[in-house]
Length: 381
Ligand SMILES: Nc1nc2c(ncn2[C@@H]2O[C@H](COP(=O)(O)OP(=O)(O)OP(=O)(O)O)[C@@H](O)[C@H]2O)c(=O)[nH]1
Ligand SMILES: [Mg+2]
Ligand SMILES: [Zn+2]
Image (tube, rainbow, N blue to C red; front, side, top):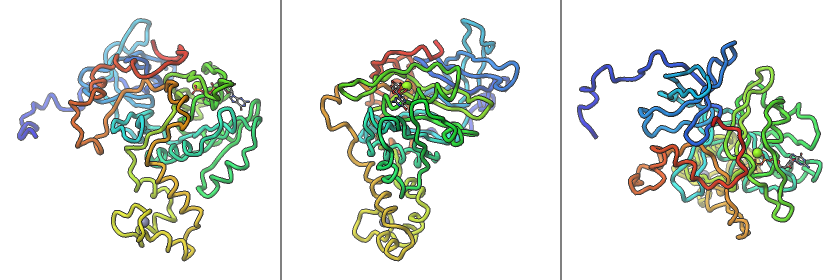
């Protein structure tokens, strides 16, 4: 695009600049201010409030990011550091507002486990939402685990049976129950809790992290909906250095416009092998000459696995908007996370015509996301 520019750029302007920058870990984002943990695990461990430096350009900063800070990194009251660099991410958990929205947002960076939290009742489980979150996990290269909460209210057997063919590990929790099995899945990982509002994500975080003090609120008895109590993502360290857990706000939908089908099928080793061997190029695995049915008929994989794979692939189509129109009027609590456009899928889109694209340049504008929640004082304000 700009021939010769690279070669003529003065050497001093090349990255990495800021050799003296201090590394940190973003634990919270709130209206353009970032809470960054510095010197973690040492006597000098401290949270530092930071803003993004202009030189970051459009690059988003989200919870879980590893960043480099300059300026006042003392963490003293009323000081502000600047984030001058975001280190390459090992994973990016993404969603779009719906499947037709090409502008994805990254929810959390660098996490390796996705805890899909679903209540067995109050609110009712919605398998389609589980499917979509599974797809998001596979796409991000994260290991999913299902956490079925509120087993004191309903029996998990049916839901467990439905997901058995997928081989996704699951834990069942109940009010006052012990969480050792869940701890086992979290230990040594950076895990993200996702799910509808009111399923009990913050309740779990409070039980796992003694001084977390995440606000929780009841589920509306009439609508069965949660109240979008948590309004932004927050990373908390598990006791004894057992890893990190990231609580996120309940979302109504999990758009998958950005997902590549290959990433989904690659999570099914037995079927991925069949697809490589038997399917025509660019097979969508629904077409008539798809080789997977034959692969299954020959006994290389089970029919239930193939059905589950196809269900997940089809969950990418259409939206998972609630069929009840009354519910659609309810606000969706959303992340304070910065918008980030998808370089892979958005090439055709004219960014200049996109009102969302400007958000990146003005972090304050992020506060206009459709949040109507009992705001929780959990951010770095
Ligand atoms: N009966 C029962 N209630 C639970 C259980 N876990 C959580 N709850 C209740 O469910 C309600 C919602 O819990 P939260 O932890 O606020 O849910 P959340 O997923 O964080 O919701 P958002 O922050 O809105 O996304 C609270 O009233 C909890 O006390 C459970 O295992 N059994
Ligand atoms: Mg919550
Ligand atoms: Zn196929």
